[in-house]
Image (cartoon, rainbow, N blue to C red; front, side, top):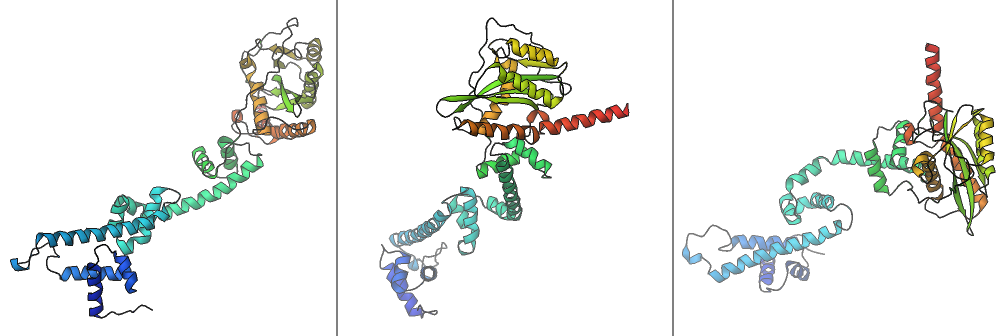
Length: 402
């Protein structure tokens, strides 16, 4: 066990031993003697203070002055001690720099070792401004509170992201949080999502399903790329998209979408692209709305939509047909956007489904969630049905006031 009190002779001999071994370090000599490194360093510093020429102020008697060689040796030893201390500090600091924000870990290292080495010394070695360290230390309580709040927010974001099947990105998650009473903006949500590694799904390349029939009858374009409507059940768009099934097979989804509320009014799923696919989707929309009398139905020039059977179904329902230009996907952009959202949020990076049943169930679940729960950017982050309910409430209020 090391002694707590050392006699003066032991201290003098220890210092003399260190000075007699120019290549030895304070640490190695201290280990040989079984004393603490800092204890030996303090003895050496005290001895330097007693020795002639140790201070910057020159002695009054010229006879006590050191010769130039000895003065240089003393300065060199002092510099060696300083370098040893810097080396020891940097070795300790290296453990702090293993990960995370390098600047923050430097501040933390200074905070943990300031009593032993002093803030000024540590900041100089680590290359940081003392004012920056003091500011960091002063703002620590606020920073800790902010980190705790971000941790709570991250937990809620994970839950919202999980509830959306991993499809929601920053805008929809922000809207969901605000509806739950969280006072957050999209920038904070984006920052927290980056921190925890969450993203929404991204757009995939589309597959061409429109096969025009050159001899078929064409209808005029009644919407002119105006994908808005003043009221529900007045303007619709329709389209067909493919669903890739294992073994190189495909299934197909036909949709009828209300341009006012973006509600999916009708849809049909089949393993073929015959005209029944689009007439079944139109019939589903009629069942949802009760009737489509006077509404516009805008589609592309696919053979199914230019067929006599579809024209007859529209006429019977009182629907006016509208068609986009041949080969122009922008003329039916609302339907194209819907199909893209459906695929990227159900497939989530996969190329297709393994079976028709799997694809049908995935479509069934997503399409109903789309109407009832999925937030839509054009509806101020409300679901189509929620938007229609607001619209009908407003209309009723205006009617009663009139």
